[in-house]
Image (tube, rainbow, N blue to C red; front, top):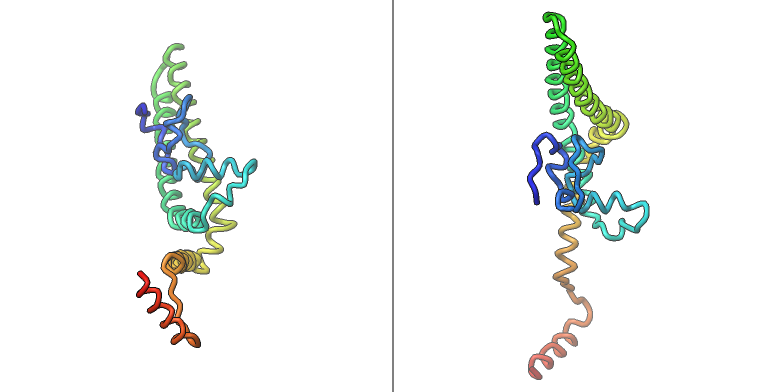
Length: 190
């Protein structure tokens, strides 16, 4: 697998398994909000055409939701800091234009640089808009109702159920003596 430039790795994907695919073209800040989860993300994208929900385990979905609730504030803060840095870059370019007499070739280079910075800022703003929308309409409403705790409890309960399913135990109430006799006879035969 070839190495790609760090500027193409967003917080959510961290270079997901898409890099291994043929014809992979890196993008800055891809639009797949859940891309960090690699194969699972691709299954979710194909969900419109296939019955993906059967393949996904309930625990996987709960873990994704929990991760969303836990990481969204940190991601919003990171993006705000990135936007502040990009805004400073833009201001520096504008100050450079203001304070220097530029020839045509230099102006062209400065305008290209300004365009690149503006595009970077737009990508950050778009992701921030998605996060703010999610927070305003969904995350903040349910976070105040302790949904993170409830999801962790649900995951714990599912883990216990899985353990019981793999190791079933039953306490006999009425046929204890008869079943013990059958068990002893089975042990003698072995």
